Image (cartoon, rainbow, N blue to C red; front, side):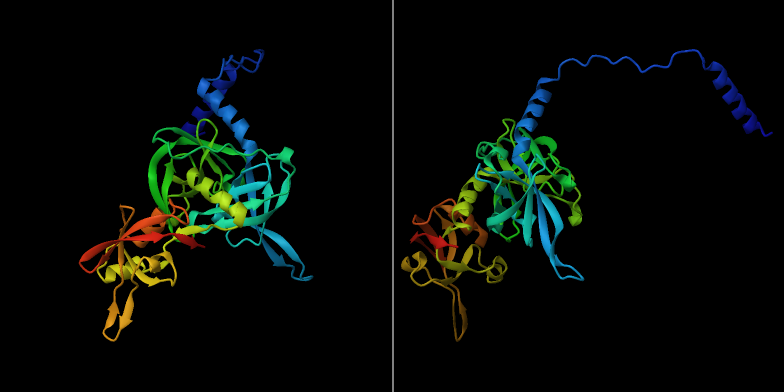
Length: 358
């Protein structure tokens, strides 16, 4: 027998001899834990109170059977949402149901309800659904404000990451005033950045403050090279935007924005002409901009004659085309705003009455 084998055998013999065959083998006594910490109790209470307001949303596509050609619903993605009011309106992200042909909403009691599309706003990545659940099954979420948020305050996210229902993650507000691109291609400003874990399936769910009020809609994560991997940076559309957009979607099914009545050149085109600001390409006949005397870009035999360049609105500087809509969305249709334009080497202030733009 080899030396290693002899040593192994000796070790087994020693272990066997050291075991007391008559000693009782019982589970260890459980130590009393004591009371939960105050912040733990607060988090548990928050989850118990808000979780019934959060829903699981399934994006469905219709597929034809191979043999009978009957249409069947096939899940093609999931996300989260929350109950807006007792009438059954549900808020989520536009991208959660982008391309869907049908949708189904599952409540916390696991009952499932077919959902109808009420309206969507891709430029803010928001969408509203309607379910016909009885009022006793609906727990509307409490709505807070995003105007007074502070970096460092606690936040909580409840959603369905990877299809796992009623998942709670916690963190803090990491930064405020971020800007992200919506699925509609426009900028969303004043976005909330958080380190509360947000993963695929969390989209459309609520970001909450420590009072259990929704302060944002979880929308996106920063992920290296588009891998979808969570690295501690998530973004939420602020609730002050949500609270402005959702009632419009419920009333009209779409959002009506205030506008000048102009089309603007893409920033890449404006920069090619050495323009800093928003270059006016066309001015709609009869619009507020036309009545104020705003000039479009024209083309003559010698080439293009550049129109007015919007450099400020109500004293707020305009550096790019997106700035125009971002400034105007803080106003209402019918308001008159001062638009500062540059014409050659001169600037002029125009009083423009805002009109409805769909």
